[in-house]
Length: 388
Ligand code: FPP
Ligand code: MG
Image (tube, rainbow, N blue to C red; front, side, top):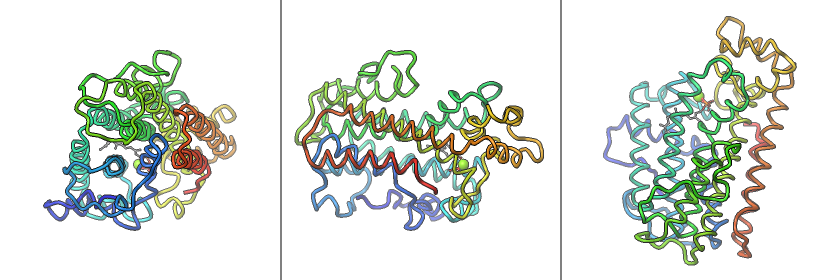
């Protein structure tokens, strides 16, 4: 793995805020890096050589040396973008705690420094991304950042029927969470498969899942599956050698599209469970405040899935639980309406979609690739079962 992305000649408060969620004990589940590394192995087989397990102490702008180092760099980029989004999110949500400790803006005593630290991390991620010299992967990760911001704004501004529609909620959940999983997974497939990225084309509109208007955002013609498949078919000109056994362009396109679908479905399952946990787990287990979503005006899966049995939830949701007593009443109605088990069942359906996407990866007999595919399937199961 690589050394901390933050080491830099930057002011001490900035380094403190930027590294707040990267330090041991506060580093979280590291799901996104695990996803990138496993997808890479699932596509290309092999795995890390002993030398690849040494800490890479070179600066983030230095080009990664071999195929595994390139995947590790993308894993670092995905986690760095995620942490940047958390720094911003805790300021936006005025959240005091995360991962069992103080939020970064509380720890450094400045919302301004925390937000700027998020920007700083995005810049560090861009530097590492630039060193990969892969336009397709850069495009995918840029798309993920734009989606994260759009999702946060959509969540803050949704109104009327959008607030009580499950499809609109899932769209927002994809933008908030699914996109980073989807685009990072697709990027890992492109890197590991060894093609695409040098031509500078637009990279989009191609792929097994493109073109069907009934498909969800992430699988449609503008989604990451189609974009990644497009980049896979761009050709290899100018691209640094990535894989000892590159896939053919059609296989690479199929692998990238399948990886994007896996990531999107895994991310949705993760977000739906996160929203269920808000209504079912205590703050001591979550490491952040419980019952915070309704109090923060968020209408999530447990509410929407209890709404049929408890129609009173509709009025509460439409006014974003603004009146005194609304959040407590919402929690009670969610309990009576079975919103939490229904949300877990919805998450299980997304996890099953994720596992089905693994079946669309090109066939392999490589033992490491087969093990990685099994581990990805297990990851989908664990995301649904988690309690914290
Ligand atoms: C957590 O959601 C937040 C996110 C999944 C994404 C936040 C995105 C932004 C703030 C946009 C800015 C993005 C970048 C890359 C700087 P939550 O508040 O529902 O969950 P929580 O309980 O974990 O806070
Ligand atoms: Mg939040």
